[in-house]
Image (cartoon, rainbow, N blue to C red; front, side, top):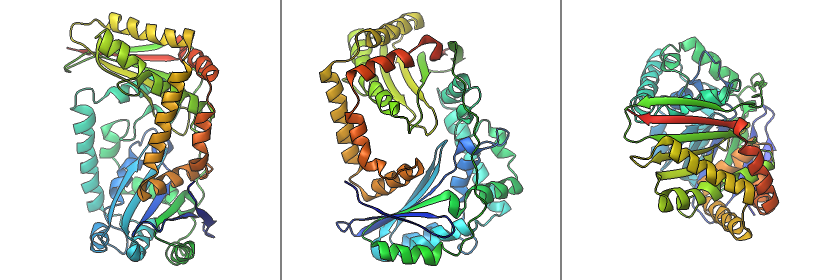
Length: 411
């Protein structure tokens, strides 16, 4: 059971505190409720660009890293299609340094042409290195466009195309910042060797004076139900043929999400999973195969991807994969199999919750989903999944009309 206290500042900033006296450290985590799904389709990649810009100095502090390093701290950030998260860890006695730094960049970034030019170049290079020049690097650009017709999950966090970042103006960047990086669009979680009273005083001192900003109202188009299978073929300079299949699943707050999560574990969660045992070890059709999902806030995708063994045809590989899916639909799972993945999930959750850093991030994410106490309830939701639920969901999810297939062929 992870205990926490919660309060809200008058400017709308939600603050959650998890006291942990077993560590000398403290973590300050600021989650902004903005991700790639909140971008203009003509100006994508901005949430991720901001992750970089936020380290380029703020209005009163030219360098973010130096004061934090002097205080014995370290920091990082990540962006997804749903959120942007910044976190730093430092000795608890120096926690005010983190409040000072985080509040100043929420108050206002140092919007300069130089900073924008520098970070734009960094992001452009990242785009080229990971998504254009890397083998299989464009898979998710293509797969998202295939699977989504309407919802902004159709582009990746890095952006839909390189030109969007290359052409970003200072005005574009300022507008995006003042729309999303406001106290009433943020969640502050402090965890570690702190007290709620201390955090309250520091939050009021450093974040309290920042203007609430205009509340951003999300209005995202819903992805219509897919009614026919979609396929795409790509030829590229890659070492092996690869097969990617996706099916639409549920939003993160839907109870069926837990069923879909366990299905992905049974099929492709490691070397003892069904697909690995059958298609890699026994039939030797794939050199590697996995099944996973994005865990996205809105309705996401369950994915199976595998690299084919040289000399195996795509038809042969796909037929064998479809056979395994059919088997799961027809026969369901055994009690033993279901218990095994539930136990694995339980140990993974317990392991994740060990570090104060992970606890802070998890509390912030669950609060964003609408209930921070989900951190304590989720295990029961997994335990409640039955064999019958797995069986019926397999029939629904793996409907051929819900499938998106990408054949990625080596030249």
